[in-house]
Amino acid sequence: NAGVTQTPKFQVLKTGQSMTLQCAQDMNHEYMSWYRQDPGMGLRLIHYSVGAGITDQGEVPNGYNVSRSTTEDFPLRLLSAAPSQTSVYFCASSRPRQAEAFFGQGTRLTVV
Amino acid sequence: QQQVKQSPQSLIVQKGGISIINCAYENTAFDYFPWYQQFPGKGPALLIAIRPDVSEKKEGRFTISFNKSAKQFSLHIMDSQPGDSATYFCAAKKGNSGGSNYKLTFGKGTLLTVNP
Image (cartoon, rainbow over all chains, first blue to last red):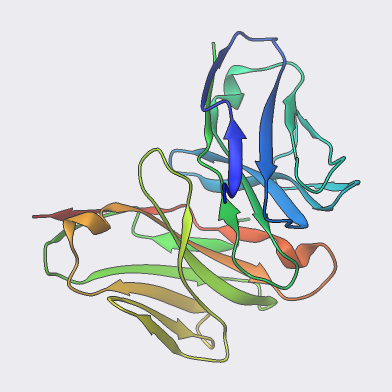
């Protein structure tokens, strides 16, 4: 049982480049979300999805896009990377009415 | 507006001591209060959680104390061990109210160091 899998684990981008952070879960969870973690800031919600075809913005959505075409996958897209997007990104999933969220191992992104 | 405030930012405890981390919240709609533990290079993992209908929950060396009237909750780690050294996050979640019933609001985290 792999749980929540994020790829890549590390990435360096140049300012203005685009990329997609991948997230896949094999627990058939309906709810998936993306967080960014910055020193002293905790975990801040970027975007979330309550099911395939349904997404919504979190606390810090600017500069990021998401889509949810399947239950398993929830990719996060950076269209034009900026140094302010240097962070560690975590994907999480959970079931409806089940409180526990399961997190992936994270993607450490550096934008230079 | 920070909905969940966590303190202290960092904490150093000697082996065998008690570690205490505190959180306070504003929104009375929150009905689930988990603590997550994160080791370096790993994602957060659920450690222990409580709902507001109880004042305390204990799992092994870890205890959550909950004060509904004060809108505060805390994590106590008894007999702290070097292996407990990690970052701890408190969080809160609202009850069933459409899409928001899944969202976790996190505190900023506490870096715990347990010296041998």
